[in-house]
Length: 207
Image 1 (cartoon, rainbow, N blue to C red):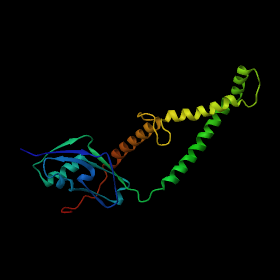
Image 2 (image 1 turned 90 degrees about the vertical axis):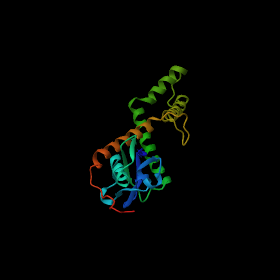
Image 3 (image 1 turned 30 degrees about the vertical axis):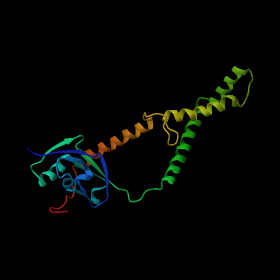
Image 4 (image 1 turned 90 degrees about the horizontal axis):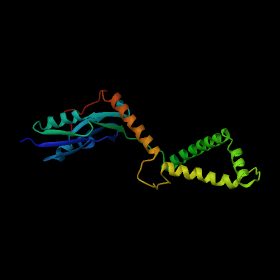
């Protein structure tokens, strides 16, 4: 009876230029026997001339395992490819990155809110509402403006379902959904445009 081997391709992995990618790097493998040996079989080499991305397909891993042992019955689970991304050498310090993004978002969102309020004459609207409620004309109806300003901030917190690191429930926020869809589009683009590029295979006998 042929021994069963189950392969599940990892969705996305990171690699350094020149790194040899082995079965364990690009798949989750389950076998009745010699799983550790199969995990260490070399699949491909990630070289600098390939750019930032490379796609390894399920059939490439099957070919490598078959060359090692042609008697195995190999079954695939899940998606048929793994995206390999070049590992960044240097990263921007997290604190600096957060500060830059925070400043840009603060300025951009502030200008957007102010422009909106100018377009709809929000100041005059507050003055009118204040007059209707109190019968008094007031140039700065803080009784309305302060709760309104706090409400904008609270509404943003509830809308994005996050306050610093705290989430109010397990539902994804609109921002998280947009980031997820953006990453899915990036992955599909890489698959369509990178998987047909030539890649330098591991030489025979490499270990």
